Amino acid sequence: MRHLPKIQQIKMFNEVIRSGSIRAAARSMHLSQPALTHALKDLEHHIGATLLIRSNDGVTLTEAGKLFSIRAHLVLSELEKAAEEIELMAKNSYGHVAFGISSLFGVTVLSSVINDFKRNHSKTLITIKEAQLSTLIPNLRDGRLEFLLGTVTENMPLNDFIVEPLFDAPFCIVARKGHPLSECSTLSELSQAKWVIPETDMGYYNYIRQIIPFNSPNNSNAPVQTDSVVCIINLLMNGDFLTILTRARLNIPPFSSFLSALSVDEDLLPVSHYGLIYPKNRPLTSAANSIIERFKWHCRHYKWC
Image (cartoon, rainbow, N blue to C red; front, side, top):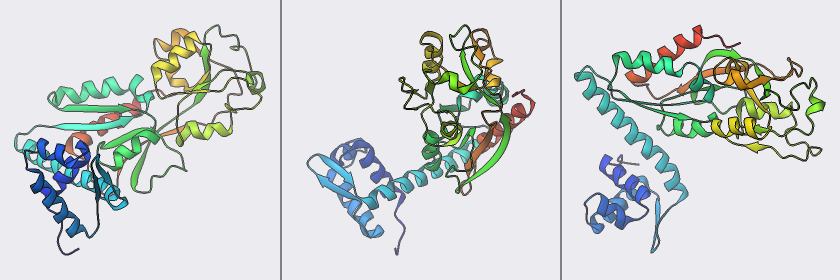
């Protein structure tokens, strides 16, 4: 490639993908359709590959286009963050920070972290995504999120990230107080239990599938999978389901008032390792660094057992 694409060309390409057609993108950017078409052809010439397939129904990305779209979004995202940081640095202020967490952080240290951060940065916009890391990692790769907090296992695809350990937390099998199986002490006694578990293909919950046969052919109740904490708690309380949660969660009101851990082989479930994850080759913004330091402090001082 003799010349790098122009920023405006990348913006046009991204808008075509977002809008679904050249006509809609041209209208959104207040350009003529021929001018936008010419700019896209010029972009493809610089890249040396066809990025879009045009049709009466809109546009479709080629394989090269799919690859370029990921990088294009990241380039614009980083430029926007750089421009925002420079502008805000001149004003001695902060702009925006976006990060992802697993639900444990949401019910433990998050409020303390946000309150601490907002004392000095009240005008900073904060975006928080709560989900399993398998859902959040693609958003970290493409620049939509700056860092993640969650469970980390050896088999997770994290070679392009820096991982910093935060704390370890024990897990347990959980039911509502008074559940018919609440007195069970062996895994075999749970062979017909109804389970609700987070949906993920990596990390801690995927790992413990090797230990607890949620999908056992002998169990007539197939598990329910969801990333929603609200759904999990509702099924625990009203559907007599079981799940796997950290012991720390059971010490928090209101969970402590209606949930209890089953006495099933306390060493059955391995301790989970929680960590901070962020890209190796992309600098964190000042706002992200500031809020990360607060997470680290509160994680060090919280009782996770």
